[in-house]
Amino acid sequence: MTSEEAYRKGGGRRGAVLVFDANDRLSAWNEEAEALPSAGRLLVQGALPETLAPLFRGLPPGHTVTDWPLSGGGFVRRTAGEGVSGNGPAAGADLSGRLFAAASHDLRQPLAALSLLLGALEGRLDGAAGGGGKNAAGRGGALNDPAARDLLNAMGNAVQSLRGMVDGHFDLVRLEAGLVQPDIGAPVVNGILTRVALDAAPRFDGRGLRFSVLPCSVRVATDASLLERILQGFIVNTLRHTERGRVVLGCRRQGPDLRIELWSTGRGLLPEQLRILRNEFQRPDGAGDPSVIDLGLRLAYGLARRLGHRLEVDSAPGRGTMLAVLVPRAADGADEPPALAEPAGLNATAPGEDVSRARVLVIEDDPMVLEALGALLGQWGCAVVAADSVDAALQRLGPGPQAPDLVISDLRLKGAMNGIVAIRQIGKALDATLPGLILTGDTDPMRLREARLSGYPLLHKPVAPMALRGAVARLLGRERLKS
Image (cartoon, rainbow, N blue to C red; front, side):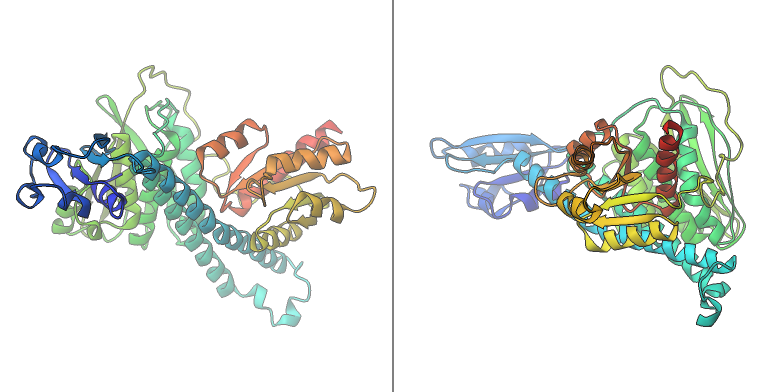
């Protein structure tokens, strides 16, 4: 929670709210604070807590004064009296958490549908190019039009960028609000680089840029998923400012740290632009003018600051730009054997496993996503049974139903039902152990923990079509090995 957010949360509540910055200087207050005795004389920007002590003398019986620390430094001083409920930062943070989770889930639903529909359309283009597009020539050859494929690639890149920004934004907001804490471990950085590369490679390829990743087996002390988000912010910025040439992602040791660097050719920055950007990266409190940093870099900087990592930038006009994040090496520090210079499968377009002819039950209560999932799975040759609830699923499977080969379910369904329970209830009703896959746009830590402990694979919306196909292929492959 920042000082401005704390001030807004206090506005309109019963009780005075004063916000102090990291230097213990008064930075904001609400209208109730202005009504306190001597407020007109004492409430001035920069006042110290001890000079404001007279404000809280003579409060009515039953009223208390409490200090609440802010995640970015500083604290909130709040008065509360008997009968005042929901007045503490914890209540505000809980409400914020619910609002952020709901907003994140709702935004991800149309993004998920759009991503899946693009995958289905790409499949139709591939089928038409191979002569498998039904009546493609009779429709004027639209599916064979190279310009149509270029447009599809551009749309896919835009959706990927938007997905990364939405995910990064909500990660940052939840961190700043103190709703989650970084999960610091000792991951091998090569795994992080590989995931970033698999996500970014098609986007660079669509822009005609050569993209390569250098292996690194060093362990680092960080939250792996948030470091991945930082690098995705670098990718977003690089895609925006690089028209031609090459992009390289790699690492080098620097004292106790590991520098993870993204080099790109391109326009580069003018000296004054470079100076301003460096100044922004050096601000310890995150304050400053947000308009001077692209959204991708702003998210990367916010996440890095919360993790205690440092960002650096170098650039030369007309030659290109280097972005770097400095991450502490893990204390145990044992290196692993180097991986391949380019992650395996980096340029793969689809898993080799055939998923056609599989009978897949999809349970999803959002009509948009349900329709998109059905279209994509049908494009892959699956026989799809689509339903928005367990009861509807059993009804559509028919009397004496044959068990589906796979159940794909949203995590959050109507009412108290969730996807984990749904898959188990379907299996119980059919007297079968069914392989299941959970899709979710949820960000609530408790829900995600429950999903991970369920034993079912979990994919986050908006899921990339090839990631979904890979998961489906793996699950179907396991079942075929058993039979």
